[in-house]
Length: 141
Image (cartoon, rainbow, N blue to C red; front, side, top):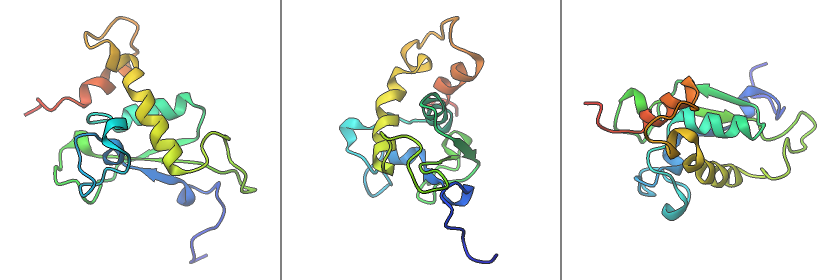
């Protein structure tokens, strides 16, 4: 089959979210897609994944670069694919009707992640989440 599938449950049809879409540090020209006051400072793919997995969505992470991201650093890599609709075209979850819904939800939930709230890295934070918070820091150089 040469043409792209129309089946919404197929991975090709999942919607893409790049961290730049919800990054408050970016301008609209640099790829932010939601209002800056609702966006998050330097979100990482891991954080987006954690939030959406917790919301019960089918999530994939791909090692792709956002084309408008000039920084080739590994912490800015990655994009998240989310399944919004089931095979019959109905929504997986009522509250996520569009990509905007997903972006607003993620931007709202990331600041509540343990890795963000406990900067000291409390004992509770799992290994995955603990690492998620550190990715956003820019002092890697």
